[in-house]
Structure formats: structure tokens, C-alpha cells
Amino acid sequence: MFELTNRELATVILFGVFVGVFSLVPNLRREVGPSLVSVLRSFFVWKIQVPLLIYFAYAAGLVYVAWQLNLWESWQLKDTLIVVFFVGLPLLFGASSVNEGKKLVGNVVRDAVGVSALIVFYVGFGSLSLWAELILQPIVGLLSLLAVVALHNPEHRPVGKLANGLLGFIGLWLFVYTTKTIISDWDGGAWSDAAKSLILSIWLPFALIPFVYAFAFIMHAETILTMLPFFNDRKRPKVRVRMAGVWGLRFSTRLASEFTGRWRGELAQSGGFRDALRVMTEFRAAVKQRDRDLHVYDENLAAMAGVLGVDDDGLQRDRREFYATKRELTNFYFMQMGWHRSRGEGYRPELLDLLGDMTKKGLPEDHGIQLVVRNDRQAWRAWRRTPAGWYFGVGGTANVEDQWQYDGSMPPNRFPSTKSPGWVNATSGSSSPEWAKNDEPPLRT
Image (cartoon, rainbow, N blue to C red; front, side, top):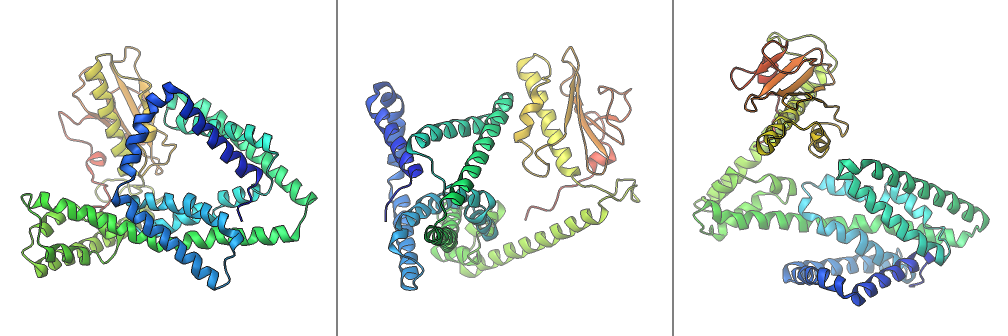
């Protein structure tokens, strides 16, 4: 029932070694101990422990039903615990970020039945010797840590690429080793048990989705109810108002996550149950209208994709990524301006490396923004080419207050000035028509 492979045994041994080192090294205890105690105290509170107990009871109920239907056997207990703790718990603790059911299902598909999960499952057939596992696992852990750290530190990206390359090589080697082991030691019975374990690792995470979704909705609803007094002179709204608010969310995490701003204020100041229901009805109608507007917005972008030329207003027809490009370039302008103003050392040519973490919405990871800083660091320009082939740019001069904007069919080949074609000082004058055009998608209710 609890027979461990060499890989699993090595993991347990390494964890035990870590705990032992932590317990025996005084300096480590003094430095890490207080933080660990604080984390444990925060963890062992009823708001966390009660949902955990209910979660484990729910998981146990699922296993019992599966056992009654002859879909589960006692020898699968170890695999079941692995799924409950290492797949289900991360989903549960990440419930606050679940904004819609489709995203939750997508996460489960990725983690439980995605290509990477299947590869990990396949490679798990070929455990190495215990000593080899004890050596390999720390190496893999160290390389993984280096890759993660390098991801958030642009200056360490070469190290991250090397770490990812070595991890890929190790993964390929394990894949080949596993294949060779399976071919040489074919066992039909072992494959039958493995297939059952694979099926368990798929159906159990999916069966946990309803509980995680319900927990996510409760968390969103609790946040809303907690914030309502701040919109009502610190007074807690009546119970019937709060009930109407929760009922009006229709058990939708998407609606709950979007119930912000003025809607909370209107609900908090509702006079009673009917008034609160009216607010919730108007909120749902506003969300539906926003969704329709967004659909039209996306359809217009798709219809104009690849269409050259300008419309009746003289604006580019193909406007893909126009909004995201202008937004990120504007953010970059304020970053450069803030650095120059606070440090007085001129503009930074390396500041573009920090932009990678900012392009999380609307632009690809390889954003393609280009930057040139003058040798005296008192002038700069940055630009990006959109999918339509139209260029947007921003820049700055010795007068850090001036916000220079550029757009045109070619990239800017000069630093900003009144004599440089395509550049406009938006601080002292109006933006160009392309910059002035509001391309923001309808994402607010």
C-alpha cells in the first residue's frame, strides 16, 4: 500500500536531511526559526483549518464512492494521498485567483493531463538506484531554482538559459532511460496497475473541482461583504442586503471577482432586500453589455487584421495591439522620467530589461520594443512595431517633463525634437491622431 520507489524514497530521505540540518544548525534556527513559527501560527487558524478539514472530508467521500463503484482499491492509497496533497491543495490555496470555472478546469487539465504531466508520469516508471536519485534530485532542484531566479532577474538570464538547457538534457536522458527500462523489463501486470494509477491521477483532480470552485466563490463573496462597511460610513449593511448581494452573484466567481468599485458602494447603501436585488440586476446587465461590447471590439479587430490603409478619419484600419503598445510605451516613458528625476544620472539604457515583467497583458513575451539612449544620457527614444506594420514610439530630452510621442510607417531614426519628423511633444501640444485615438477595450463595468 505504501511501497515507495527509489525516487520517492530519495525524496523522503532528502527532506529528512533538510529537517535535520535545520534542527542542528543554531544560526539557521535563529535566522529562519522565527519566520517559520510566524508562518505556522498564521496557518493554524480556524479560517484555514476548517476549510482544510472539509476538503479532506470531501476527498475521503470521493474515494469512498469510487471504492463502492469498484473504481478504487486500497493499494492506490499512496497515489491518492499524492493527488490530494500535491494537486488538490495547491488548487485550494490558489482559489482566491480563480475568476471563472473555465480557468480552473484549464489548470486541472494542464496539471493533471497535460503533456508535461504525462511525461513526468512516464519518466516515473524508470527510477534510478537510490544513490543516483539522492545525487540527481538536489541537482535538479538547484537547476530549477536557478531557472526561476533568473526569470525575475534579467541580468541573470544567461544562467537561466543554461539551467533550462541542463534540465532539458536531464529530462531527455530520463525519458530515454525509462523507455529502455520498459522495453527490457516488460511486465503486463505492472502496466495494468500503472494505467489504474494514471486514471486515478486524472479523475480525482477533476472530482475536486466543484469543492475548489465553491471555496473560491466563498472567498470572493467574503471579500465583498468585508469591504461593504467602508462604502457605508463604516456601518455594516443589513443582513437582508448582504443576502441579496450574495444571491445576486448567481454563484459565479467571475461575477464576484468583477463586483468592485461603485457597485460595492451602491449595494452597501441599499435600503433593503429589493433595492439590493435591483443593484445586482443592474450589475449583471452591465457585465453582459460589457461582454457584448468586447465581442464587437474583438470582431472589429479581427475583421481589420491585415487590411492596409486608413479609414475616413485618416486612422490606420488594422489596429491590433495598438492599445497595449501605447500603454506599455507610456509606462516606459514614466519609468525613464522617474529614474532621471530621482537619480539625476540621466536616462538608463538598460531599463528596457525591466520591461519584460510589465508586458503581461496584450503584448507577447518577446515584446519587440527597441531602445536607444544618447551617449550623454540626456535623450532617448523607444519604439515598437505593431502587427499592422505601424510604429509607435516615446522619448525624452534634457527637459524630463516633456512627453514626446511618435508614430509613423517607419521607426524613428532621430531623438525627439521639433525638427525630427513624426515626433510630437504631448506635454505642450496635442497628441497625434493615432496616439489620441482611444483603443482601450471595454473592460470596465
